[in-house]
Picture (cartoon, rainbow, N blue to C red):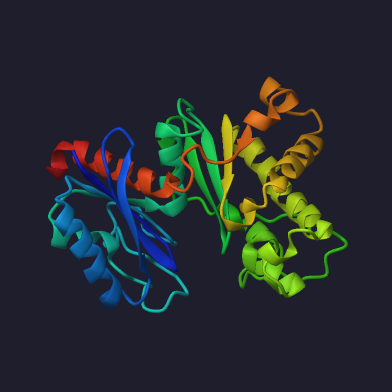
Length: 295
């Protein structure tokens, strides 16, 4: 069987097809322009592939309440034209297949617990650190939804006394996204993260802020695995720095061998390489396809 996965980002839409074994058979990227420009291209791609179902992991915020009149819509977003876009409705009407829907980071953690680094875990989180910071939460064997969906990139952290930067988040002066995302690095230093690879103070500050957030996630969710990725995390030295800081910040309060002895296997990169989002999206489609009411 062939399933479709759509990782919907503010810059590009990654469209892919794969099978129920978690194999990506093909993937393409479509620039995220206006909805009227972008939807026809996505629809044409999936129509040609004869998929059984489609799963969408989208940038947000999004409406995940199935009882809401705006279920499947993107709600507030600074991306021109996309606020209020009916993602599920337009794709379902055009393709006439079941459509699963969630946030991009929830899709990514679903992919990782199904086929990747968190396979077999009942509790795990996926953190992407790039243009923004997003956190996908898988708890007690399922994705967390509630009033809306987790917005772990906006938890408030303690600002380093040496940091004079005011933050890039328009809502919070000291949330982890505002202080540790890619745009915050550019705003603080006037250069992209990749241009600052050898400047130690950049990564010491980054590791401090990300470790604070991760320490809070450990205390709140007790995850069995923490997966870190995104453009900023391509600086691989960050992993060791973050692990060290998290261990120090926990200060022995959470005692478990994964933290005391096996931190290298606890805070890790994705097992699915660059495909957690599209594979997790496919899994959303598979789960929707399995529901009798969607046939």
